[in-house]
Image (cartoon, rainbow, N blue to C red; front, top):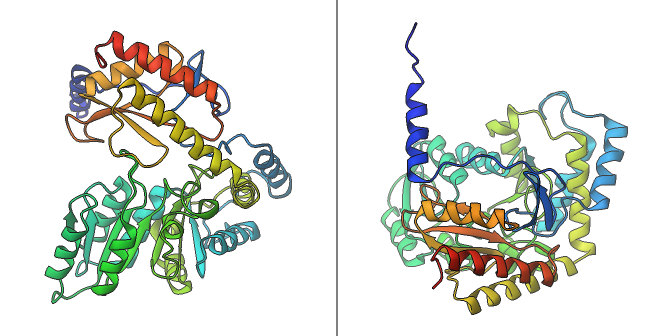
Length: 395
């Protein structure tokens, strides 16, 4: 018998199991809502990114059904062939107007939006100045661009300026890039100060607003609106997969930027376009952001209530400023065991450890939504408290 050249993968999986970092995929058996059914169990869902509870909203479902009846199930090609529907262009115009930019392009995922944009607009002679905790899609885009990468300490504006200053006389373009909200710690990037630094050094300013779109700013317009930086941030990336409740990503900016991405962003050029149902549902979601601002108010009311209750019980939620609420545990093995025990008690909250977060900083990441009631949050805190004390996480 021939040897198995992939045997090393099984060995690495065994190492993950020994370290307590191995997981299996849970199966969601209902719509993604505040209380969901998964793996045969009813659980309070604090694991999703469905911030505004739009994933199962009647208006999104009806829009999707109408689109299928008119356009069918799929588009049949990439955007540059037959895959651009009139509804794709309408969605891009709607997002651009919402974000107060000249234009927008929609990608198949937020990951594709980041990776495709950075790799398209830069080349090997250019420089990227990037926060050390930026999302993996930004990191991959930086690598794909083959530009020179300079990492600054997390949220350390002075260090970013130091990096920019050191590159003043170096040839090539400079791109300064940050997350708007950091997905693991829930803290907000100092976009206002970084934008000033980019302007002072002639750099391109780019922000990934995945976790702030629909959360920060007026009607959820993101960190650019939160800091009142309209017209000063050159590249705004957002997602359609979190607060919007559906699937995809987008980039907003100048007309020239978007036209260039139409021609050079590889994920756009080589991936079949969003199916009609997805496109129509996203379109309906942006209408709801404008029509129902109370959803964002409810999200923030729930966030403040939940964090205060956790603090009263003695939990450490780190530096979070947003609905992303990390409950610090320490080691990855403990975080995954804690998550599994919570699920058995009726609470779905994800355990996260190395390499997603640094060693020794494993946590449960809980995300409240606008769909949770006070009773849901009270019950979640009771479960967290009971299991944490049983496991020795709280004294």
